[in-house]
Amino acid sequence: MNLELTDEQVALRDITRRFLADKAPISGHVRELLDDPSGMDGHADAVWRGLADLGATGLLVPEEHGGAGMTMVEAGVVAEELGAALYPGPWLSTAVAAPRALTRLCDNDSAATILTGIADGTTIAAVGLLDFENVAVDDGDVLRGELGDVSDAAAAGVLLVLAEESNGTALFAIRTDSPGFTAVPERGIDQTRKQFRVKLDGTPAQRLATAAPADVAAVIDDLLIATAADALGAARAVMDLAVEYAKVRKQFGQVIGSFQAVQHLCVDMYETVELARSGVIHALWAADAAGPDERHLAALRAKAFAGRLATVGDTAIQVFGGIGYTWEHDAHLYLKRLLSWSALLGGPDRYLTQLGARLAARGH
Image (cartoon, rainbow, N blue to C red; front, top):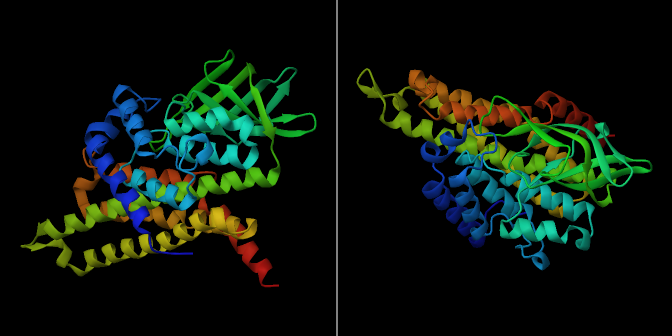
């Protein structure tokens, strides 16, 4: 495992960062979409097309389907930059969760059309891998039930969902314009994340593959790891904003960065971000290169650390002082992004317990 980015990965990072700064700034793009349930208005469509032209939507799509065939490390490089920019679109759902679900659970033939569309940017996909016990299959591949916490369902043209059959669990693809499909917005703390409760009432679906529990668990690990990279980017960005503010803001005739108390806050943020970085890099590597146990342990570590990473946003607001509490300042948007990561698939305490149990078992 290499903790340093290669030249190609640095180039990918830099071009993604420049594109987002130019085409999707927080003031002119992110804030405009805070109250948009889809996060994909006319301007956002152009940003999505730009990401596709950069190859960012097809990073994890195999080359035979028009993608780049890269690893989770490259996806993590892009995810970190999207997190730093507070990008509100469906990239994690479409470019990470969907191709990982399709490549881990399906053969190439059944997934080919969707993967090709993801790679060229014409298909936006959402993934509902949770609460699938509440979704059942009727005769003729018709689905009934509800799914909670489905990201980007309103923006998606295709929803990948698990459903219970008579002999097990299977992965299905649903067109979101199909009869009986309803996506109801679920408002959370983070307005840059678009969450929905999906209702299926006799909705026709295409059966793609049988879903083995181990493969489903691997996809969930992939999603946790990629979201950790996104959160790392958000934490790094708000830390950098706070440090730069501490260099220029004056109180009592001195810049506040000269005060020991403020210096300690900045050091605490830096330590937390760098500890998270090493864990995220290892987890991204493990998603492709390690065995199932090590991959899952790496995902647990990243999620168990989520609560610590969320404190970076809180600490940054302390450095900003009164201005950090205003709607006009971006600090609260970063804090909310980090809090949404902390809450994703359950709070950190649950993962700390699992992590401790696994490490204790390894010691015997």
